[in-house]
Length: 180
Image (cartoon, rainbow, N blue to C red; front, side, top):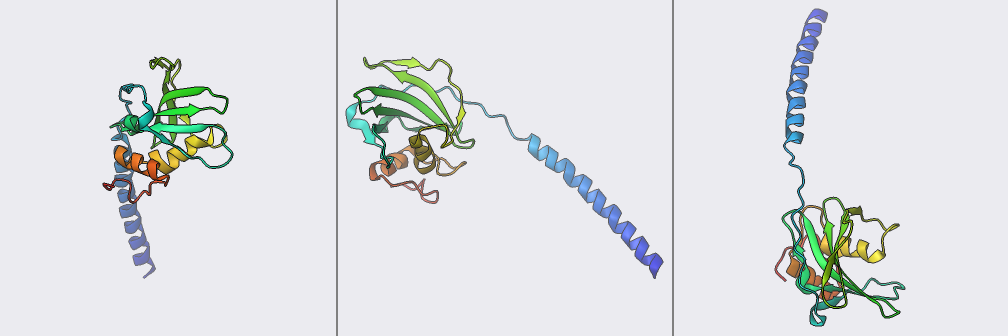
């Protein structure tokens, strides 16, 4: 009886190690099928007009006004939500920027800066930066989490982002692609 048990255990061990070897190769092959991410060439949108600006309320004690240009919101095949932001500071200065948010990696990138004459200048050193509450203004975190990237892999339709911004209510990950 003891001999049978030892033979059975040895047999089970060899079958188990064979299955582990088979699956180990599959895991490696599966991981290798991931294609490297390629950022698409961002097209700078037309300069924003006053009638297309949606106020973006961040709550709290923010002393400046933030607007998102409804006409500039786009969803790229590369997983990046792009938009134009207009920030009017309490002191009277206005900053216009064309930006992107990479939802999968929680990153932000500045593509271009707007000039008062309605022209754009490409950002000097456009780099992806991790969106964190400690290092970035709160509106980036809110815009990322509540409107542009409520899900890491399922990007919302631009029209739904516009509708949510106009309502002032975050997009729910379960309803982000419905046709409101």
